[in-house]
Amino acid sequence: MSIKETITGNTFDELIGGPQIALITKNVTIAKSGVKKRGTVLGKNTTSGEFNTVSPATTTDGTQIADCILARDVDATAAAVVATVYVSGVFNRNKLIVSESDTVAKHEDELRDKNIYLTKMI
Image (cartoon, rainbow, N blue to C red; front, top):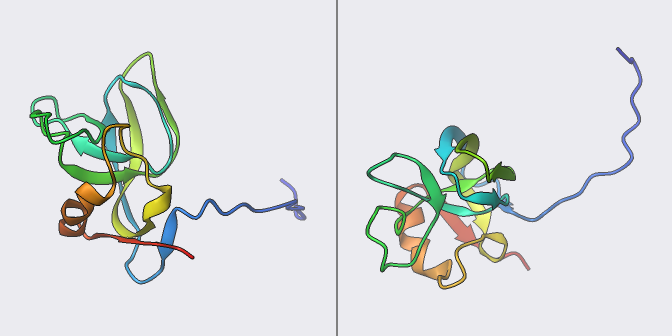
């Protein structure tokens, strides 16, 4: 174990929007569905209990309702995986990811009901 460690840099992806609300996480199962990036807004399938990218209102399996935000990139290409998600906090709306036919604005009220608040960083 090294006593001295050199850190060469730090990056800020601007996902976290502020410290006003505590960041709280939990682990959930992400459905087999490909690679998902940090900041993806997830909905929970009411039948399987697995999470997937929040989908447009035309979906009726529960994933049309925003529930949480993915905390780290995951690869669920081969199988479902357990991943950490944010269930509380303040997030930069411009860094959140939803499906192509959807918008973050459509899910803002659902997220607020979950104690997830959106802001716009300048």
